[in-house]
Image (cartoon, rainbow, N blue to C red; front, top):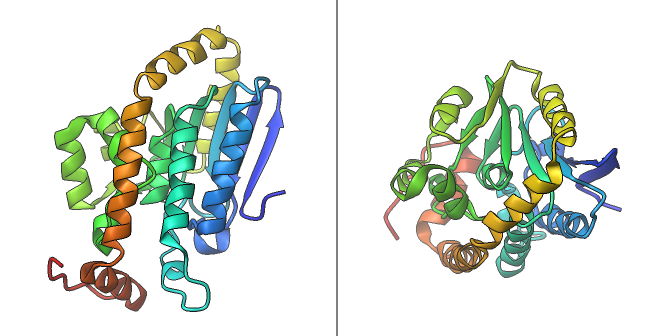
Length: 259
């Protein structure tokens, strides 16, 4: 059914796996659409109460597929891509399940936005997290502005977005961006244990409270996603973005001009 992700369901728990391990689960336009489609499928599945999101191979997700952005053979249509990203972020936030991000390796860019859109973040101690859009002259998307502000407030969100630093998982937990730290190689097991324990609680009441809290923020998220989409399309046409992705591909430091 899906080319770039896997979705399995068992005992009230669904597991969604980002499955492009050869490119560190970088998200191309196909994966973005498939994620949105999978979340929409789960939105109407009342039998599922917990969703685990993880990455195949060495890492959770390196973020958007930068090489695909500049591929002259099949360039990504930014307008279409932003529609997919808007749909996946909004649907993820409003899912009628408790969502758990299972982080190993790294969660960067759109991958970090995806993780932050989840209710619970479980991360391995040696994993890295980065809202690093600024490094290629872009703004966070996938609701990154909204999800960061929800967790750490506007002032700290700006610092993180503007700085673009790579955080180790311990620093991220201290900042309130990670909920549970586990030893290397243990994230999947720990997240499964969290999921199983949730099923032995009055989880229907938890999901109802999630709905109340998240529905009250729906309009704000929709507005942020619209602004992110407009800004990202504009930033894609800047000299700084072109320099940023060229420097990334050429493995050198970018030289930005502010335009």
